[in-house]
Image (cartoon, rainbow over all chains, first blue to last red; front, side):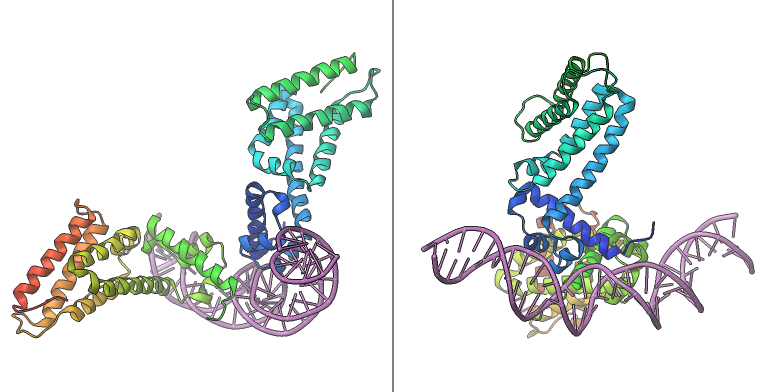
Length: 189
Length: 189
DNA sequence: AACAACCTGTGTATTAACACGCATATTGCG
DNA sequence: CGCAATATGCGTGTTAATACACAGGTTGTT
């Protein structure tokens, strides 16, 4: 890894942390490149040296989250469905204000799509389709994927009263039931 | 006032706040240009673009304090000896850790000298020498000046138990007594 | 005394960030 | 609607900050 110029790191971090802060306090739709730059105490031109626009910035941050979620999903192999589910939900708890801001936004659709297709992708990986399913797999995946997203959204928007572990546990339970019903013989890794 | 380049302000502030932090936590003598730069997340070269060395940096910060003390002394004209003394001591209370660090240092002598000669200068301004003093004025000034410094040092190093107002009040009382004894007819502005 | 580890101050070439200005959207309010 | 205020994205020239290297100096330890 070649060393990155300290100025680049400083600018990027100023932009990103300011952006996250504003996302929490004001919401994505209110954010402009101009006021990010002002708050981050950098020139507006500097912003454009690093990102195309605020969507590009958001995209890159979302990608970082997806990467971390990927790691969690990889760990899940070793720890089983239940513990895995808890880990997954914990991640959203830790970054609750970030995801809440995005779920609230009128105009951060790329985030929903990215998260959904990632989720579906992971589900797909873990479903061994040796047996004959009752439901078409694509339909089932979409079903479980959007269901997961729905619960996540409720959770980060504080629409559920249960604590995070209860949520995670119950979702895992629902997964199990659905998979058993749909793929009679087996199975979830 | 012409606008100063944002980069300059950022560098200077990073250096100064890091320096003050280290002064508090580690003491002046332990500080090097190298570790200021590292902590401030700037190149060492950048430090030298703004300051000659750590003594120069300290000097400039001390000068800023002297400027603010000057303002306090100017206000003292209007509020009288007692209130003035309280204001003066309050200033040291507010920047206690800074001054404590300097009093502790083996090697920040310029600070002592600057503060002492400032103090003596202010005393000199306020002593009306119409009457015939018992003591030579330079001697008296040095006497009162170093006495003040001594009490200040004790205070910021937590060597006295009294609260700041008690200290200020008693020092003002001592001033009054000394001046009355030494300049029989008058007077402290 | 010798040695290692660390610091200083400076030179050089490179570049990210800067100030400023401009033409063109976009927004929102009367 | 129309118009003012605000935001965008970019071009240009300038400069502060950077990485890196180097030749001493300081410190403290064995």
